[in-house]
Image (cartoon, rainbow, N blue to C red):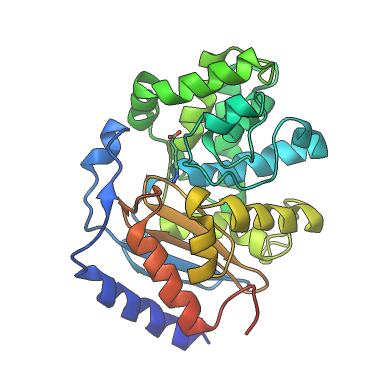
Length: 310
Ligand code: DON
């Protein structure tokens, strides 16, 4: 299987390297507009610790909304199922930054992966701490699950989003007005924008996400990160909400739980088998990586990986 996987990753890299339609790099966070759209990396980690990668899989990029998976995991560990009183578990069918349902549904975000829901999760993590303590805690958590200290926040990206994130400020104010934030919006946004600015490579991400494909436990160290039930539920949320209003199409084409980010990364999990991370900065109309999705579609089809059967 490893030999086949290595060959499939190389095939995909060659097939996608010269693609002329690569999507559009996010430019609403100014430093992301500078990223080279020709970049492409993919990494797969198996349960015995084998890491197979191709392309720019060791280059760090801004993980953006992929960080929402790690923040949710941390918040569930701290507060347990009480978080579900403040954020829902339904797909929104709307863009990631939409405020339409938030107003209609009185400040209760549909799920923890749209921006409004992730801002509530940041508020839960902030609790009564200083933003910088919470940001440090998130970084240390991600370093620990990736078993890699060389993971940090890109301050240029974080500061740029703090300066230009007016839509997120609107969401945070709407949440506060509806009594669904304990802390002040600028403090919560500081945490949220910093967590989104985590810089990681595909290889580091595949390693950090491995516990989700192994029922909540790191299969190499045997260290338990979340309970079996929670890991299954995080995967369920990634499947139904991980690609926003593109989640149905992603499930149809790829068939495994995954979470995207506007930096062009996608973290996917093949339960019982592997964790996958892919990076191609150009995005489709829903803000999800265009070639990253294509790469996962090809990989899962060629390896026979799907949660829907085979
Ligand atoms: O809040 C934002 O808009 C960004 N920091 C994250 C959005 C994002 O990654 C959406 N994912 N595809």
